[in-house]
Amino acid sequence: MVTRAPAATDLARRIAESVPDPELPMLTLADLGILRDVGVVDGRLTVTLTPTYSGCPALAQIRRDLAARLAAAGLPDARLRTALSPPWSSDWITAAGRRKLAGAGIAPPAGSGAPARTGPVPVTLGLPPVAVNCPRCGSASTERTAAFGGTACKDLYRCLACAEPFEHVKEI
Image (cartoon, rainbow, N blue to C red):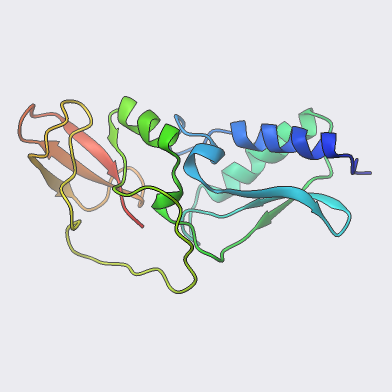
């Protein structure tokens, strides 16, 4: 039976906020902005996630990791729900998350804040519209070397100033 007390909801939120993303382990679900809500839905403790994109292969691992941590904390009956609308945006990455990416040598996406998005997400196949600064030396003199990195949400760059290669989280 699920405890409906606010304490259970608060505990579940703290746990969910602390789960690391398997593809970007320096970020938590809260940093990445995919933790949508924690609350009671239809009488049951529910954690709602929004994947970075609908086919994200990491979502299954995120759900397993989150369910295991909730169960270990005495919340084994918590429901994990996926919400695809509104779609996630790279703008939902927190300021702390952007700092953590840069600290790990990964250029964060441009933009900030979390604008509401209600329609289809535009996908462009060309180069990013803005320069990507090197996370190591800060130079804007960079070039993209590959459209895809270790995951579909990242591309690869090289800094022309310090000659270091780096990944960049794409703007979505």
